[in-house]
Amino acid sequence: MPDDQISATNTAVSGSSSATGDNSTQTAAVPAAAAPSAPASASIGIASEHEHGEGHDKDVNKVLTSINRDFKEKQIKERAKELKIEYVEIGKTPINPDLLRIVDYDIAKNAFAIPFLKVGYDLRLAIVDPEKAETKALMDELKTKGFILHLALTSDDSFVDGLKMYEYHKKFTEKKLETTVSETRQAYDKELEVLADLKEKVEKMTSEEALNIIEVGAIKTNASDMHYEPGAKDTRIRFRIDGVLHTIFHVSNAAYANMTNQLKYRCKMKLNITNIPQDGRYAFAINERKIDVRVSSIPTEFGESFVCRLLDSGKHFTTFEELGYEGKYLEKMNNLANLSYGMVLVTGPTGSGKTTTLYSLLTKFNDAETKIITLEDPIEYRLEGIVQSQIDAKRGYDFAGGLKTLLRQDPDVVMIGEIRDLDTANAAAQASLTGHVLLSTLHTNTAIEAIPRLVNMGLQEFMIAPSLHTVIAQRLARRVCPACVQKKPISDSDRAIISKNLESIKIARPDLNVAVPTELVEAIGCEKCSKTGYLGRVVVCEMIEIDNEIKEAILNKMAAFKILEIARKKGMTTMQEDGILKVIEGATTMAEVFRVTNS
Ligand SMILES: [Zn+2]
Image (cartoon, rainbow, N blue to C red; front, side, top):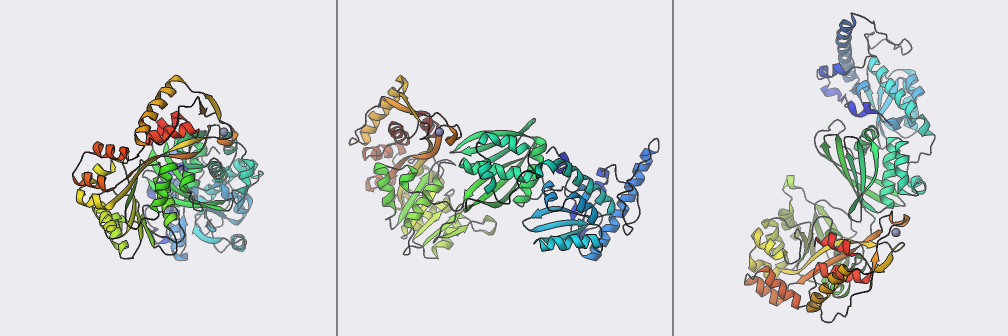
């Protein structure tokens, strides 16, 4: 779909109320096809194609054309006002080529009407004359098909221009229309056998179909995000799968321009705004699952770049076992659900699965006797039986203020998205000291760092010590794909690293009887795992329980590394050690553990 026109033109729709005098600057963009013609009330003659006088008076003609056209558009604007409908310069408005499926070119030409924007069943239709029989007939037909029509008056000149663009789309999409078009994503599910087919398919599709099949590809590969990144030569499309970005394919910038418009329609972003970041949201269904898509755009040198986060609202929250918690840490996690008060913090960078762990914990708490309220930014997943609220900083409903409000709702368990300032930290500590379980996240790399982080925020040690119950730090390492995994003899360097870690693990866990293995698993890659060698993820974690000895250490302002020593003696294994144990088990690879723990 090499169509630059769509992105090059801005939407020229204006409400009938503000319909005067703002249009003169756009006149320069009038296509050459436009020429002086009869007033709007006259019938329009598409057959008598406008012709230009060639030669030396070409420039004069151009100026006259422009003045004439300008005058006429003003008249149409006035007329639209009288009719109380919108006014649109359809010749300068992007028309989604997919609309040809609703009203084909010949019908549009015959009915003097061009659909230009469809959102759900709301359809915007540019018309020249609402009283025209053919126009009325088309409107009736569209209404019986269930469309809610929004009319916009356009001049006959603009209609001719618009029709040209429509014809252009027609030539282009004719072939593609023969391919199966489905309203749901289901059809693509079967069609898309291998991800490698995507590029070829996308280039042949309309923008709507292209986005649909890319979404299906993302769902099939369990991607969490789709990235659209325009560059100088072409646009790169990447998926984040199990936390790692993979380039899926490149698409021409022309095709991408169309996809951009389609995507912006979909998530209700302002089409004509391309130079500032925007946020939007939409949803689609596949395999009886509703997928919410959160979209954010930023302007770049080569066009708008989009990141679409896929949120499976039907997602069931995995148990701690499924997440990869095991042994002592699994026991501790399960015990947290019996907590009656205290603060539990999950730390880690973005993408470390903090939210998933918190939601899993909430699910454990969730029963008829427990009142649970959350304060999130944004709400990522809906949980049945839990009161979830969204912060709204503009109206003063931030984490700190919102938490105080929530406590009046008599909750047993409160989850707040993140502690990032003293106000929130104070309110959180207060809440846990007054008999609530408080769950939240903190941006630190390790569990022990949570303590100095809270101190640095300004939270007093005498507040931290009694309120803090447990700090968990976690990362998500990719699991090797069970379908293609292979074993290979351990290398000398891996043996050295593992045996060194096992020594330090023994300090914390003398009860653990683990030896250096002779073989380690290797990620290979097959169709099932999109050739990555990995499928799904496993948690790599560390936990510090704030027992009486550590509470005292905090009160005595003991250095963090000293507190860590205390915790180690009581059985705390570090994230890296936990990862090494998972390598020995064959769940993941050394490379993965080092990647996620940055060590
Ligand atoms: Zn595989």
